[in-house]
Structures are given as C-alpha cells and as structure tokens.
Amino acid sequence: MDVTYEFILLVKSEFKREMLFLKRYPFESLSFIFFMYIILLAVFFGMSQLSARGSLNIHQERMIIGYCLMQFIMSSQMGWSGQISNESQMGTLEQLSISGHRLGTVLLARGFSQFPRQILGFFILMYAYVIAIPDMNLHFERFIPVILFLFIIALGVYGIAYIFAGLTLLFKRVGFFFQIINFAFLGLFWQNRDSLVEGSLFARLYDIFPLTLGMKNLLYIFSADELHLISPLMHQIFFSLIFGVFGYFLFSLMEKKARQLALLSQY
Image 1: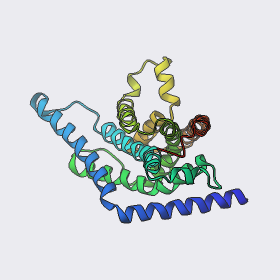
Image 2 (image 1 turned 120 degrees about the vertical axis):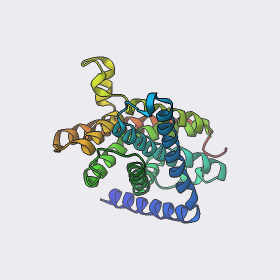
Image 3 (image 1 turned 90 degrees about the vertical axis):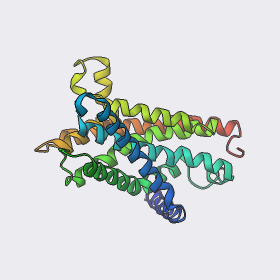
C-alpha cells in the first residue's frame, strides 16, 4: 500500500512538473504538433500532384491513424530519453539517480504524467486531418475506446522508451538515431496486414508486436460499423505488458552498467 501511495505521489509530482514545463515553454509542444501536421499534408498533397490525374490509390484512414500513432510514440520517447539527455547537461540526472525512487520508477511516473498531453496531441492531429482531407471514413466519436486502447498501447510504447532511455544513459547524445527508428515504425503502421502471407514469420511478428497490434486495433475501432472489443483488448493488454516488462528489464541492465561506469554523475 505504501509503495502504491508513493508511486501516486510521484505521478502527481511529475504531472505538476509537466504543467510547469508546458506553461513555461508552450510553443515547444505546439510547434511539434504543427511540424508533424505539415509533414504528412505535404506528403499527401505532393503525392496527389505527382499521381496520374491527381488520384491516389491509398488507404487514407490507415495513413492518418498510423501517422498519428507514430507521433504518439515519438512524443513518449522524447519525453523519456530526450529529458534524460537534457538532465545530463543540466546536472540533475545524478540527483534523480540517487533519490529515494528507482530511476525506472521515475520514468514510468513521467510516462503516466505525460499521457494526457500525448492523448490531446493525438486527437488534435486526427481532427485536423479529418478537416483537411475529405471523405475520411472514421467514427471519430469513439474517443472512449480509443483512449483506453491508447493507454494500453502506451504500456508497450514504454517498453521501447525504456530501451531508448537506457541507451541514452550509456551514450547520451542519440536523439537522431531514435528519430530515424520512430519514422521506421511508420512503415510498419502503413503495412496492410491482409497483404501478409498468413502464418509467415512477419505476419506472426505483426500480430504480437504491441505497436502494430495497436495500429490494427485502432484502425478497427475507427472504421468498423460494430465493435467487439473483448478479444482485441485482451490481446493488446497481454502483449503490451510483456513488451513493457521486457523493456524495463533491459533498462535495468543498462542502468546498472551506466552506474558501474560512473556515467550518471557527468555529461
């Protein structure tokens, strides 16, 4: 009970910290969302101009949902490894590492505290694309199951964020490498699951990787006429938790190595 209460207090503290940063640097988050918005619009309308007779044979719903999910992942990863890199420069990483809480627990609390901002960014982008791109066949009113699945997907995203954060502890300046990986996820999200050979290795990996599984479930929620969520929900929870625990385990190993090399006390 004491551990749970302390974690709740930690989430509360990180949320206050998040609000202070948003108040002090409001244009950082706004410019990130605007930048992400402009990129996909430029790609979409650029491809329309280059295609024959201005027609595009693409799945618009998959394109939009996948891109917004990629932005959700980038925001989570930057909130962990990006801030670790900043704290290394400011000299606060050492204070964080010797506090009464484990560094992995602090990062998890940070992830929970940033979740409302990331959800807001996801829906702002989705709504902006629905306005800008006509004929979108999306049930935009299903925001409650979408938020539920995004939270569960976030547990899998935190597994990736743990790995990125651990590498940041060891190598410090690795931001561009992780951004390249994040954009590589976009190719996975835009992959049509129906085009994969059933029973193949790639199809099996697609079905258990929490991010591609989450993409599949979000597309189903936004597009299906009727929803049956019990089975997709159970699968998403199972694989997201496995990946989150696996990421935490790797982070613990890398944090131990960073402490042995005295990398937490200097930049």
